[in-house]
Length: 243
Picture 1 (cartoon, rainbow, N blue to C red):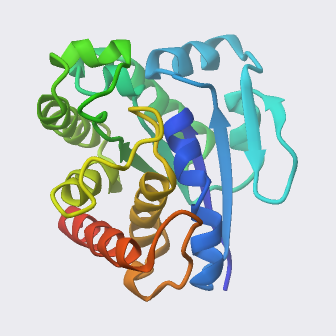
Picture 2 (cartoon, rainbow, N blue to C red; picture 1 turned 30 degrees about the vertical axis):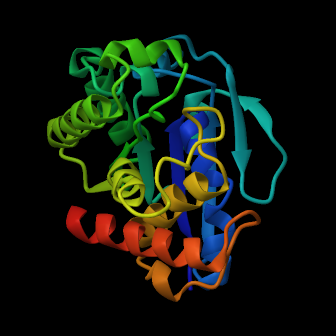
């Protein structure tokens, strides 16, 4: 089986996904090459400015290789990518005006650099209800408002670029929060802990790798068997609704 090659143009939220996705893929016997362009808190606007400048501002991690400084252009040339994912910085995620024209520009650039790659929108998640992240004020410190607004903005973004797929991590998080797991998915009020990272990666596994997470045996440290089943069910439900 040929590996699925995914380039994540992201920030710390895509790094959260990457902390579990390779292990899930391995357990599911689904070969994966995951390239990650990482700058903490990076917005779509900054990604586009980095395209224009050619700045090697990213810490690029390629499955099985050490982390290296690189540019977006260099990363696109490293593989014949199957998928390229885009996401907004979490604090701007529910503010659609911050997506334009940067997302469209990035999409057009990706089509030139990697014309075969399917473009994908990664829907990030709302902060914990008690988050102290300064960007939470954009949503009146309301998890429900943040989720509602980011969901609308990401779906709009997917339509804008004609995305081939949608990664509903934010939906999976809200489904999990409605279970006995509750609002316990964050490590610091916004990044995922073991449960949150696993849940987001499980969504990527279903959508991009075509696996059924409910049949996958990988369980990260810090997650109980009972919690694992709930998280798997939420990821599967969210993924199924996005297709």
